[in-house]
Length: 131
Image (cartoon, rainbow, N blue to C red; front, side):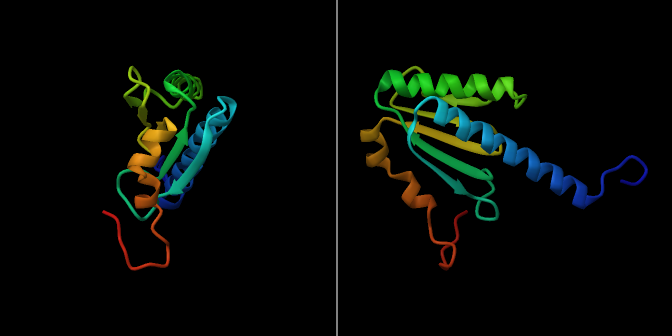
């Protein structure tokens, strides 16, 4: 740190530790809520949308909504601010965007129909680039 300003390496380290703690809160919350088939995809360097995408399933409309609600409370209690939420009322597919992490919580039928993890799980060694 020089003259009260953080060096670029300090900023990167701080951002990385924050991203890790957010992903830890997300995965712990999903585990506590008994979300099923949780998949975390690292998007760093592959997309400007987010650093991580987490995809999970709930057993029913009610379970999907409850998992999402629990995650939103855990994020707020963890000091990660207000996440943007879509689909909470319906309970088929809830999207939660924290800025660093995008979380999709699906009913199993909806998840298999859209199969978004296949789209984002392009092998690291391949020539395909996601934009």
